[in-house]
Every structure is written in C-alpha cells, then in structure tokens.
Amino acid sequence: MGTKYVYIFSDGEGKDKNILGGKGVGLAEMARLGIPIPPGFTITTEVCTAFYKNKGRYPEGLKEQVNKAMLKVERAAGAKFGDPKNPLLFSARSGARKSMPGMMETVLNIGLTSKTISGMIEKTKNARFVWDSYRRLIQMYSDVVMEKAEGIEPAEGMGVRQHLERELAAMKKRRNVKYDTELTDKDLAELAEIYKNKVKQVIGKPFPDDANEQLWGAISAVFKSWNGKRSVSYRRIESIPDEWGTAVNVQAMVFGNMGDNSATGVAFTRNPATGENKFYGEWLPNAQGEDVVAGIRTPNPINEETRQTDDTEGSPSLEKAMPKAYVQIKKIRQ
Image 1 (cartoon, rainbow, N blue to C red):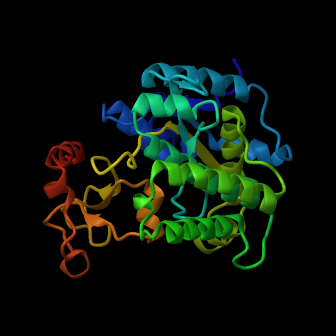
Image 2: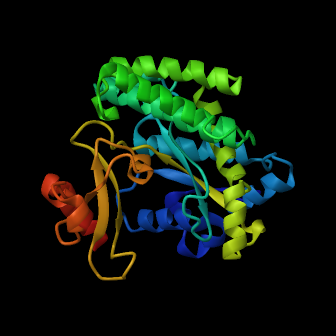
Image 3: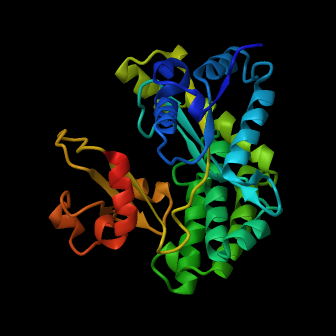
C-alpha cells in the first residue's frame, strides 16, 4: 500500500490539518458529526509539494485513488460524473493549513458538457438553471484554468473574464434587463455559445467539452494557484512557509441558482468580527457562492437579530423568507 493521497471527507480527522488543509479538516469534522454536507474528497497537501518537486507531474497512483474516491462519492450522491442521463457535477476548491482568503482559486459546475447538459435539464426540469450553471463554468474555467494557471498575463481589462463579462453586459442590454437572473434559458444558451467562441478567440484554445479533462484541469489550476503572485505575496506577509502547499477539495455540487426557492450564503456560528455569541451570516436567493463575494448583488442578513439596519433595509432575512431552512441551519449551528 503506497502513500494515501486522497481522503473521502468522512475518513479525515481534525489532527490531519497538515495534510488535509483547513477546509478539508472542517469538512471531515462536519462529516463525522453527521452534518448534511455534499459528499466529496480531499487531495492532500503532500500532492501539492510533489507536484512542484516533479515539475507539474502527479505522484504515482494518484489518478487511481481519485477514481476510487469518485466511485464512493457517486454512490453517495446517486449520480455519475460525466453520465449523459444522470450527471453529477463537482466543485474544486483550495484549502491550505492556514486560511488564505481569496488568494487561491475555485471552479464550480465541473462536468457540464454537450453530453451532460440535456441529462441535467431532464433531471432538474429546469433549463434556465442548467444554462446559467454552464455559462458560469465557462467563465470561471477559462479565467482560472485556461488563463491564470497557464501564467497568461493579459493587459489591464483584457483578461478572458473581462471579455466574457462584457458579453454578458451586452446580452442584458439587448434584452433590456438589469440582472443576470432576468435572462431566460434561451438567452443563456445563446450566451454560452458566444462565450465559447470568445474563449477560443482570446485564449487560442477551445473550452474543454470532456468532464474528466475539466476536472483534472481544475485540480491542477488549484495546485498552481498556490504559486500565483497573490498567494506568494500573501505568504510573505503572513510568514506562511512555501513548502506547506494547499490541498484540493473536490465536492459534489449543490445549487443555489435553481430559482427563488434555492439560495446560497455564508454563515458563522458567532460574529466573526466581534466574537459575540450570535448566529451571523448572509444569503442570496437564486445565486451561486461567487455572487455573495463578487459584490454584484447585496446579500441579505441571515436573521433579524444580526441585521445591519442601514444597508439591508427592506431585504428579507433567511429567517423570514425560508423559515424551515433557517431552523435547520440553526440546529446545525448549535
């Protein structure tokens, strides 16, 4: 038995922070507590170290371990990655031993391809959501994997993400709408094609239409972001050793952008700024996680108790808008 490089969340333990990273350990602890989290696995920080030592090559046996872990996740999720009829989608996120907020990369909706889109529409009966997720994948993947991870440094405002954001703005203008959420499934399907053409034009390579290629591209991009300019500068300031490396957390996607009855958000068991023992957080209906941090829409408070009156006046708290979900989250918090 060689080195263990991949841990299903429920296999990890709190003492493994050095190899699982902060996020991986958090997920492991939550899985052990029986908190309902989407299934997934962590690729250890040791793989990151080996990746850099071997000039971007992975250690022997890693791919087999990832494939085994994926089978377990597929069983738990009741869906199969890359399957045309019942597709499972993944996210890939970084997770160093010490928190490095916003320094490293994330890719969501991995596994949406021309093969899986129709299966996903059939499964969810929600074409708008699927096309919205697909255009988000193209936007994130081309930026994180095809540009940044490849060390391409475009001129100011000429990065692939900015090009795609301009296409999105142009589409909203043509349809005379203010928010992304007002675009229809047909608008988003058309936008996805525009995006793919633009990616090919800007990067010189087509957006990958294969689920496995997307997954390994995203995993490599997260490892490469450990040595991105921002990460390196941050480590210097915070005295974080280079050899620590980051883990990669691959997790089954759940969706906050399926309509007004689904949501995304961030929550803390207490106020992260003051330590006050009050359940604290914010949320957005019909959105994905990046929308909360991107600053495009102002998030709503999670409850009435911690509402910051001035800037969230008139925006519904989760407690009021989705009382059942709020009670569930509150129980988990306790």
